Length: 369
Image (cartoon, rainbow, N blue to C red; front, side):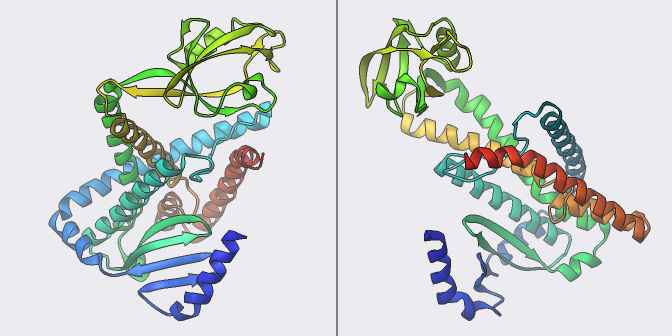
């Protein structure tokens, strides 16, 4: 109701006023687009100043793009076969919804970086190839934010194949490069100053005994006098327990240490084994202090890495209108007879849609519950 109300107000306020504008806000059915030409000068200056760099960068992106395309296709086929043969509910593709499937603020930060580097990269390479841009802007589809660089499609279609491939490959190239840089910063700058400091309770099972003793956000640092620093420590201890056993948990709650005696239930997956009923996540601390700076920076870099790597690769999946689909379709049209090129494009679309459906069903089931 909130979403419908928001879009109703937005459409009544701006929809009819912005239908024919080349700049400004345009509202359609559950799609809002804001266009501007103000950033075009900035994109032009960067592209023209480093034109040779952008062309080399984008040419390398073509090779990376086709390699990524093969990798994504292989991984989706592999996970689809596992799902069909073993009837395993393993999602090959995860939905990216901040606050639902990924953390809210770190997810938003990661997605902003994904959109920013992806679209600017398209713009820089397009201008380095002397292809005009109509506008840049932001969009909102239902509740999913996005960004875009809008090239002149007629000029893009008339450009040489290598120019078009460079423009298409530039976005994912930027995402994968950003993921690589984030991984380097995490591995060599932040990870050395982080230390494991217990197991945080992320969620409580409604049928487990922990719901009567623990709270979400509690950090378990000890069990029966044994130090618990990592999730592995926690699981190793729990694997040695039995149903009905009473354990003493040492917990950090709101900055204070609390001791709790908890009787274990019966493990639903391993009858006879002890069951606490918590969903644990790793708690971390900074060795150098400044936890309120170091930890958010580390988590932000982690999600920048994950989202840029995952979305950058999925964008190379050979399915139109993704960049990977356009790269493959243009090559087919350039080197194959028209009928064969069209048949192959439709074949990849059919196979691609089927693979995505098989890989998305487990994620959708998990989301719906």
